[in-house]
Length: 151
Image (cartoon, one colour):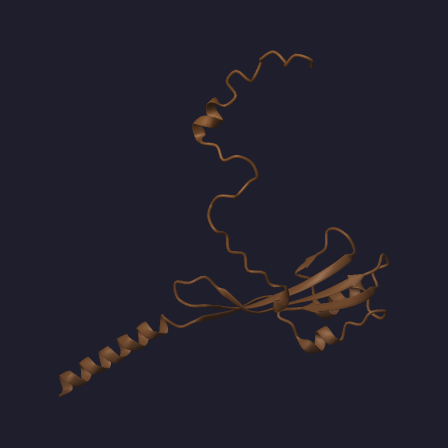
């Protein structure tokens, strides 16, 4: 009976170890928002310095157009041997005027997430599909030929 008990214990530990390897990996990425801090940013009151003091450095800032700071966060889940899937996504945008004062704040979430699923490793283009040999020999006689009459 003692040998069977040991074998059962070893089997239970092995099963627990294997089951732990099959769990879903949960990961938070980007800015970890605190609602109290996000709610404390007000247009007309705050400026860049106060926003940075409250929220810290932005995830990224706009390079074109209006001066905007973005705080981006994602909550992902990944099953073993699979690609991560986004469970929750949020973007907090703070818009500034030329003087550096907050003019508006915006929030967006999963409604802005787009899943791109490429069909293959080739990009479709307009025009005729040509083979390698047509590309290689297609211009023979066309380059350096005399222009058509009347040109």
